[in-house]
Length: 442
Image 1 (tube, rainbow, N blue to C red):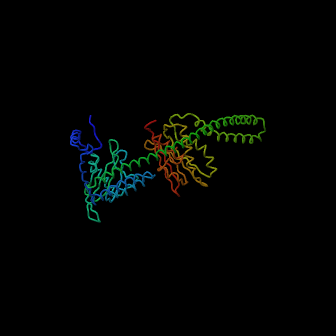
Image 2: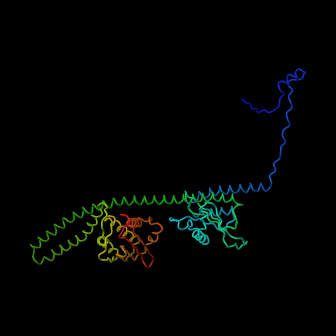
């Protein structure tokens, strides 16, 4: 066992103590302690002090950047702060962040924020294989250019930093600078790499929030639609029952009119015929409503559906309302139109959404044209309106903004089709729906 003393003062040994006592010396006398080691002063040069201050500023800048971007809610603000902070580490002329598209055929600027020069460079460099070294090694790479700065006549170089993602690469950061190499700025580029990871993570977080918000909005929309569907289903069943009850008295009136006609003078036959004519008009008005109510209450089932038939039936239902609004509706339906595979119930809901969209900006009067055409193994349904519909402008940006727009978009997507919407003041609006006869999935 070893004993380590904390008190390192030297004392005389036991043997020396005995000898000293024999010689008459005091046993309390101790051996003198060794002189303390001299203190060597540490001298910090001005260069070392400046370097320490520089590194401290770097890490304070990095910390401030991280705190700042956490408060931003837009990609534009994050990238602006990122570019500004990079300039505090190295001299930069231009900075741009690019992500690959889905098939990795090209690099696209994040949020569309890239100069024309940066976009031209990244396109040419990627197509000519100049970025292969960066993506192969995953390390920072300098691509030299023949261009020189107009200020100091120094050659300008593009510094490329690849952005890894799992075992692949997601994109790259390009920095236009006068630096001939990065060997003297290793710490600076390490800090830029850390900032780059922070920036990409923040962009992903914002995208996730947007997707979550869109999902919640769609959920609320579908919940609203589901509630409306239940109401429409109940109205359809009620309508069908009420109409059946109306038909029975009408039939009794018709039969009674026929019997009455045989027992009244011929002078009164005109009155009886007029009664019968008015009853037939009532039946002709109610009949399309009965047919529409029947198809709306059954469970969706896929079958061959002719758009012309559904348009004609729906026309009979909505035309009275259009006439009251001083709107003229014209049908231009191609004869012998092939059928599409669809659900009658969904088609009826589609026409309801379409009519709702067309009347979102009602005018005092106007006109609507519905046209069908068979062309190149596709069924084209074109709806033209004299009204200006500003909602159509938002379709490309956000088709879920309006319930009718979203329902039309979902319906066309199910049929592997396409929607083209155009609107302008003075020219009205046009909606072209393209249904392929051969669907990828049913």
